[in-house]
Image (cartoon, rainbow, N blue to C red):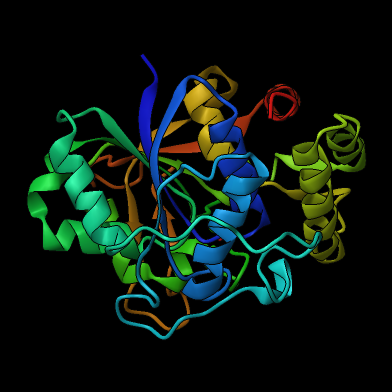
Length: 311
Ligand code: RIB
Ligand code: CA
C-alpha cells in the first residue's frame, strides 16, 4: 500500500527535486501539494510547483496556494540562493495546469479529516506557516497526522540564514513552535544531516547522463543551486536539503539520529528561529522529535538518480 503524503513546499530548486523524487516513487501516493511563501513569494512558489509537476508529466497533481507570509514576521526570501524566479538554472514553460481553488490550509484540513486517521504524512519542505495555521484552525487534525517529516533546523551545523538559525525555521519561528509543540510524531532533517548530502559534480553529471528531460532539468537546477554554497562553504557541492525528506520515506535505513527534545527560539532577535536541540540530554524536557544527524549520502544519491531515471 503506497504511503499517502502531502508535500508543503516553497520551490526552490531543492524542493523541486524532492517533488520529482516523490512523483517517481511508486511507494508514495502524493495526495497534493500545498505551497507556502519562503524561498520566493507565494505567487512564484505556487507557479514553480506546477512547473515541476509538468517536468514529470504530472499535470494531474493537485496544487494549492497557501499562506503568502509568516504568522507574525514579515516574509524573508532567499533569491540570493535560488535566483529571482526561485527555479533559476533552466527556463521552463508556463504551466498548463491551474492552481486548485481553495486555500492550501483548507486542503490540508479537509484531506486529514477525509482520510483514515493516522494514514497521511505531511512532508514540510519550507516555512511551517501552512501547517501551523491548519493546526490552529482545526486542532482536531493533530491526532490524525501519521507523521510530519520536515527539513529544518540545525544544531551542530548552526545556522545558514543567521549565525543561529536555519532558513525554514527562521522565516516563521512561531509556526515552527506550534508544530514542535503539537505532539505529532516529528522527524527532522536539520542542516546537520543535509550538509552531508552534498551534490557534487559527478552526481550532477550522473543526472545529466540519464538522458531524460527530468535528468537534464535537475542537472541544471543543481548546477545553479550549488554555486552559492560552494562560494560560502568552499565545499565541493551544495547540500541538497529537501529531497532528504522524501528519501527518508523510501529508505529510512540510510538515516540515523536521536529522539530528543527540540524547542524553537521565538523571543530573541539575536537567536530567532534557533532549534534548541537537547542532543546530549542535559535537560528533562520531553523528547518531541527524531532529530536526524547522519545519512548514507552515496546510497541516497544512488536512490535519487535511479528514481529520476524513471521519469
Ligand atoms: O535551509 C534550507 C531550506 O530553506 C530548504 O528547504 C530550502 O529550499 C529553503 O527553503
Ligand atoms: Ca524548501
